[in-house]
Amino acid sequence: MQTSRLPGEFALIARYFAPLARGFPGAYGLLDDAAVIAPAAGCELVAKTDAIIGGVHFLPDDPADLIARKALRVNLSDLAAKGAQPRAYMLDLALPNTIEEDWVAAFARGLAIDQAEYSVHLIGGDTNSTPGPVTIGIMAFGDIAAGRIIRRGGAHPGEGIFVTGTIGDAALGLRVLRGEIPCIDAAAAQFLVGRYRLPQPRVTLGPRLVGLATAALDISDGLVADLRHICEVSNLVAIIETQRVPLSPAARVAIATENNGLALALTGGDDYEILFTAPPSVADELAEVSQAFGIPITAIGHMEAPSAGTKTGVRVMDAAGRPFALEREGWVHF
Ligand code: ADP
Ligand code: MG
Image (cartoon, rainbow, N blue to C red):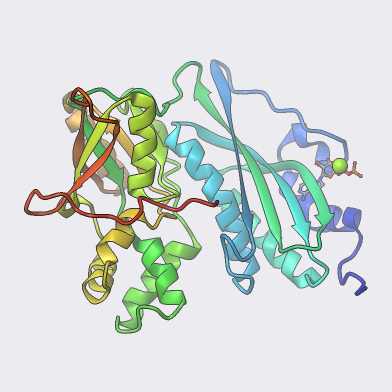
């Protein structure tokens, strides 16, 4: 058996992770068994965990700093969609013995960059070796005013369906990385790949949706699949129109050259944008929020009550008002 190229578990923690806990008293410098975290006055803690796995969520030779930032950001994206302000996170790291210390150093540097960007601290975790691929589990905690979390089930008939940012970039970016969309220019390719490798969680915008959005989630599995989740818990039908779905200029170019490119954008996932419903009465406030953060908020359809005998779910309409056929709605693991 090959011996590990890493220093021992506790040396790794002291060298690379303890510095990331500085400034958070309840982390006790990562020198105790557990951490203490209290919500801000009048708030509750929202907790979320998400793991990313080499070969499943990232490519094994992706840069370690970007892998770390993606692992953190996918969790912050969930907190944002719930309206919560991120505070802290824990890190469960499983490393195969092919990993070298430089990799861990770069990984910790990536975390440090995003801790500064999003004002969060590492407060604990676990470190293990594994015979499998690199596996990174993060659990993130955020503050939300008590009782104000934005859930999936609050949508009503007649409300609009909105998304932040643009849809489909990351799924197209993964295709670009695999060499499956060769005929787009370098700048467009770089933009799409960047959207795949480094999501932009809507951390500042999300909390501003409290009191405006009636249901929300972040798009990780695909726009249509994730909208279905809102439909199922809200017991409604969603009608969306393909020509209203916001696409970046690079995505438009990629879609024009790619068979089924639009379907991929609608179902590919990894967008980490917020998908939400809101009543027509808050349209002006949504426009203000969009303006304040410089992030587009686009209406893509509306919610309806299912008519007698029909099921909840998502109906996708093309520019001519005909049903837009999809082979699948999004990513599923099994
Ligand atoms: P042991 O498993 O021997 O009990 P622990 O898992 O308790 O050791 O780790 C010691 C301390 O280091 C704890 O405070 C734990 O939260 C922290 N820790 C371990 N691994 C990580 C990690 N990957 N990131 C952050 N903190 C970690
Ligand atoms: Mg332990």
